[in-house]
Length: 199
Image (cartoon, rainbow, N blue to C red; front, side):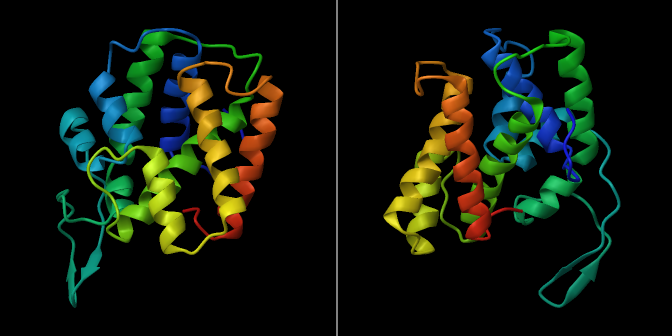
């Protein structure tokens, strides 16, 4: 998957699994790992995959530490960084099971953006303490937009981006065509950029 920007390892890993879902294949392998990482539960994802933890220096409440042991109290971004090697293992394992998938409807860069769209919203909402475990994206958007006083028009357009991601996961003619869905998603992506809600 290629793009004109630097990408996080989570994007091709989860983007590939979204492509697996859209292809109609049933995700029986790595279902728990996929569920954890898609919902931003990096701590449990790390405990399942158990890849090496990269060295990291952190500062918390006046204390600098080199202890990189994952903790549930770590901020999302720190856990995401600690998940890097595990995500690479996850991605390699997934592609070895599901193989190369060609999608003529949705370009690879849209899969990458779809992942970044969802994890950015979840990360921002979680950093404000707005989320319960395995919160649905519809509720993530509503809570975060309410906190940020985002206009109703922009909220509705952001939700269209969510609907497009649902179309990838569970096709039900949510948009008349894939091109219509991609257009609505790109608009939603631009709105979260406008409100500085990307990571």
